[in-house]
Length: 305
Image 1 (cartoon, rainbow, N blue to C red):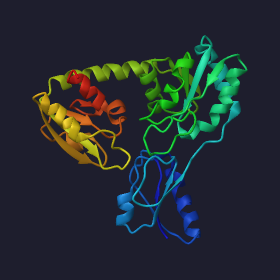
Image 2: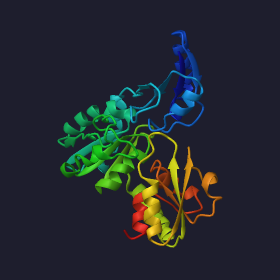
Image 3: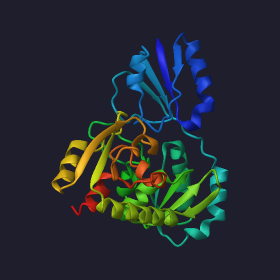
């Protein structure tokens, strides 16, 4: 069997070991050197063009159906309860005033959530771990407490029961999905940096950058709507957005690319970029673009709809 391996950036050092193990089983293995941003980023078309029979995708849960069989192998870090307790005790004053907590995490740290729940409960706190219940139609359910950058429903499902949220992990993008959608205080329990910190600064920065982008979009006359060729990054109808823009007396064109970067789109004579791919691009990478880049909900705001 010919297999295409996909790994996210954090697992590239293990890719050769993964390939060797599969080869020992009698398989022919090709390692994808392209970026892998999540389970939405399946290289199924490439796998077919390379004559592969299967994709082995490390580090994520199933998110989207594929043109080719895909084996998803989750990657989770075993919980270091001593480190977790040490971080919690040292920075406890930041969160001790709250009575109830919602816990969320990316896949990598999900096994740490029950331990953190127990630690908080021993301090007399109420703890909830929510779940996203099939927000994508026929796509599989996420695990309890699991966040995606495009899905904060694990937090939304318990937002009415908690005073604040703690996102356990090493980054802020996944956690921002909860902070922006629930309006509840959010704290990042960062395992790599060994600290608890408020996400308020990240939220404020997002809203400032968004306000500037929306303001510039209001004055734009020509829009470039970007769709992704990644199978799991098709959240909005570019055709519908084009129609909405044109009804406002403006012009819109649809562009397609695999990975949206400034150099791929900014040479085209458009005033504003509308991103229909991963929302992260217009949240974390907004300042990399010289032209305003907005997500569809921000487009609606700019068009006063």
